[in-house]
Image 1: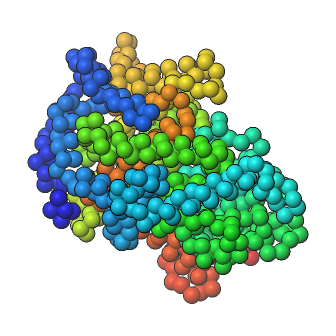
Image 2: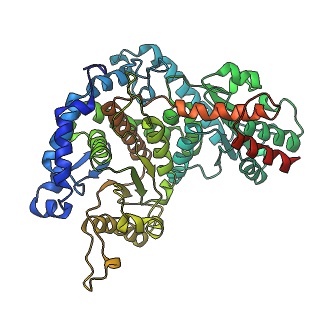
Image 3: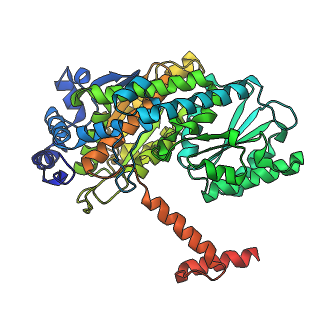
Length: 532
């Protein structure tokens, strides 16, 4: 089926689901579990080291039947093939979307007809290994002959969020001597405070920028260069061993002054929010070692294989994707909470927030029509148990429909058995309490818990490079599934570009070369008056 033939809102299954939504609202999830002893077994899956229990969702077998029927009637399967085989599925930019190729084996790439990029990927992986091995072994020396102890990754968006999340999540495997720091915000306090605590002689900066023209990244790189010049009294600092560039535009990196031998490359068919699998992941390889970095890629590849080969009813990304469709399009849920019960996954909600909202925050279909249904939800969250003492009040007694993903580890070598058991029991208890609710025996309405709040529970034995990679790939494919069903382009981000353009116009306005609305002009005048 082509995108021109496909109209989600006109499908018979879509109409039937709207009818089912009316009756399901009066159904209790707890009753579905109590009356069907086999539900938990049927509504659970395992793949790539992850276990999913989705039995606490407000869905019946009939609802699931029609949700999966939408999948069969959609262009998903054809677009999935196109994703892995390098067709130009990013239609507005005329590009393939090949982040999955970065973690595929050469044999798989050849099978998919991607021999032309296989050698390029292998070459850059070799360079990641070479750079990371040298830095970890102490043979990469700064300008004064001392080994590197601190890495400062300067990037923004996917060039920051992915590596930052991975280095924190996998710190169990981190090098004892090397510490990674991440600077993304153009707020000067961030770069200044980071550098203030470091020794320039043993610091290396990775400038991670797809185009090497991003304003925030280049301004922070400039601040870092000035710091090195002042601390080490050297010139041509970008050409020193203290700077590495990672980019799709090596000419721009060289133009800035980065030594060509210190430039790693990736390609425009790797979107920023999918770029940690590429050379953007250099800081990850430095932190945890190349072998563990390769294990992260392998875990993601195992999820890719599961997504490609498993039938829809047994396909974890498809199941999560259609559940999100159910809540957003039929039960009026406008947001989705991601709650990892692991402090090292503190940045996971922010990472998924960008992945999901930048991908599916769209209002026009692939064939240029305005959508007639809701698309991407608002993604938010933070780790438990801290979250229980902040916004869980709203989850339990608020008025919004908010599906929750609980994510936990069965074992954690960085914790203690007592701590970890209490942590996991709290997670299980919260998912149960959201579902069950409770009526106050003394009939105090403010002590009533409505319950019937849906959730998924994702478990892994331990947080390893492999299971971490699989977890991120799971959410990537979930977002892709939803984009296919909504018939939108999940791989562009023109809304981001508009904000950048307006910022440039405002900077031009200071010299009187751009028109501004009265409100913005007044705000800028106030800033100018304060800084004068």
